Length: 391
Ligand SMILES: Nc1ncnc2c1ncn2[C@@H]1O[C@H](COP(=O)(O)OP(=O)(O)OP(=O)(O)O)[C@@H](O)[C@H]1O
Ligand SMILES: [Mg+2]
Image (cartoon, rainbow, N blue to C red):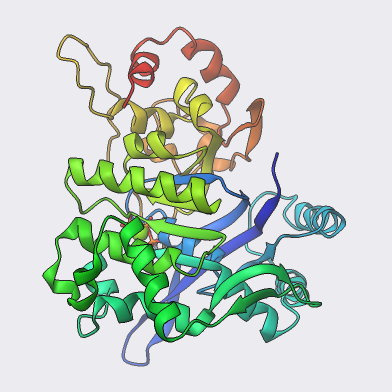
């Protein structure tokens, strides 16, 4: 495997629910609950799941845009550091997932502080990562000309050049005047835009063009990692395909890693190297993309895959319909969070939370009956056929 860029362990993000006149805390939304995640250099990790399952929150935590309630985030960790922390983490949570005690929280949060020893280091990390949102209308300042929209992050962060300083901080140069103009022009040309686009405002563009601008803005500072939060969900299918191919080309050229967040499995399949499936704040399945589509094991993943539209009128599908709504993340079901909607659920599922375990090489699943499902479902036809169709 290639070099680790980012590693998050034991990440939880609970948002307080306030109510009453006093605004006191009535409970917590468990937006992300005990997630371990690794992001490798230059890869695309797909994050998929229904609305509200915590995808955006996870993306914001790994970019250090919001602090996790517990958990630690490491940027290019060294191996000894990692094994110590993983050990500590598994000890802390060995009794199954639960609320951490105050002193345990402190340990995880202190280790986080140790990694981000200084504000300098934090700033260096922030200049190496970027985010692109679903809706570029609200993420681009309507009063700024496109040239300024793209120049803003360059002005703040500079452009990285070869090498790091003694503290491991990336060396960056600040561009001004003609050099800056030429640099911006090169970037927008690469995005399929041209010079006179630079002197227009965001509202003068189509959705697809606006998304190209948002991507130009992110890629201009040559980041190592970009979180793409539903970047193509608001676009029509042909424009979506163009943006996906642009993103692929940029990744090859700049060796940037993506976290691609979407609820669209067909898109995930087309772009990702690896996929994480989330349900109510938890990872329920994780595998390399081909493996996941060939052998979806978690009943939730199977249902999502069976719902992918198939462009073949002769193909008879066996679609798995999920009953009921997603339960509230403020009050998640006991045991396995998916048991209320699961077609395989048995008694144990409502009492005991399944841990993620490796069922096939590199393929982890959180389900009490993962092995049985894999065995009995290996003859399944519907799901397999759907996964064989090129998208
Ligand atoms: N700032 C916040 N304050 C309170 N609750 C929040 C906040 N941000 C997110 N949440 C809640 O956390 C849960 C997860 O939200 P999140 O936006 O991460 O989901 P998502 O998977 O990105 O959904 P979608 O597909 O709709 O974008 C939701 O129940 C949401 O209401
Ligand atoms: Mg979201």
